[in-house]
Length: 495
Ligand code: BES
Ligand code: ZN
Ligand code: ZN
Image (cartoon, rainbow, N blue to C red; front, side, top):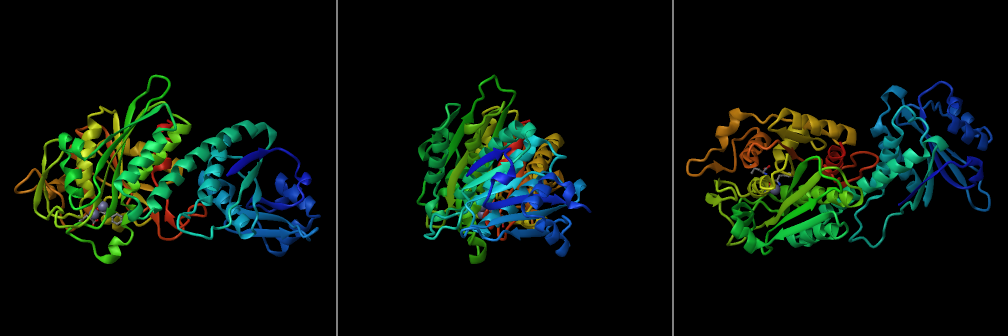
């Protein structure tokens, strides 16, 4: 998408769509941009607002259309932004989404957006949020569709001259952030039949190839055997597709402040294995690599705009399939750190792969580990479809993540890493078993992961719900993969 900023006079624009946000107020004319639009409409915009009782209330809309000149019309659309005190960066993203949807409905290739109403927020952040909103709205998964949806080609942001530079920088960052998110969505939306471990590896390699600051090492099946990655090997035992462990490293120009490892669950399709999932539960299981997609999305942005941290991106790609060779309920495996696990349910496979990849992460000696995983259906029961669960072995780590999530506009909530339940995952015949009791499944999964991070400050984000939207999440995130996690991690890394 082409996004430019413009400080020119509105009267020079004779066609197309111009959108303006309006905060709730008695006299709409106090808005400078609105007043200009009103003048251009010959006062019709204001009369229309009175007729429609449009006062800028949240979720309200006002549309004015000029008489067509040579078959071309001009549209002015105002969206109510609600009360000034309630306006935040999420309002900006939401507004950008509405602008884009309107442009699509009106079949406009280009749209001009005013940032009036957001003066109370940081100019750079507003630029970033508006660009994120624009680019995220423009995403759609079209690989298998002949008829593509109408897409807006360019957006002009109307700004005051004084804030032009900050807005521009914010816009650039927002565009690259959204690029990372949209890449993650693309990977997640791709069906399991076209997204095997090797495709995830290629996606990571493609990103690494675009930046001299990013290196990549891939461990194949033979090397995984040498590493003793019994989790990845066990889970993929029933699949035709070999597992692979991917290790991306981003190094900043200057000496790194700290080293952070970001780990993602990367099960390219989760049938459940011999503990087969019921048909309905299996339907969407192409999403089970969303954690790794988020890792790749983060690196896509790091390739464009770096951060001061050294960042390690790690995922163990595999498929959880069924065959005569598949791992059986009751089998015992030995994972990378030498611990043994009794696999009582082959559908609790994510934690087995993470036992290896988290162990691998600790060997990079990071100052902090964050993992993102579509780990438990129980997290959907606990927090619903739109909020992910954060569990951490140090309070400060959870706090940092929740703060970054809030600023980035992603919904996360802390869940306890509650030691009292740890006996549920002790096995009679091995060090651990891979399932707990009937209740608190997200917590026992988190507890299962804990020993593999070796006391390094760590947070686990269960993204099972919000990585995929069954219905549109916001004006700017439609149905399908959401790229959840990318923006939070990027926000965290920019601190
Ligand atoms: N990939 C699933 C979790 C999942 C469920 C993600 C729904 C997204 C949406 C995971 O591997 C799984 O199957 N977990 C089991 C664990 C159980 C067997 C202890 C679950 O949640 O039922
Ligand atoms: Zn599973
Ligand atoms: Zn799974």
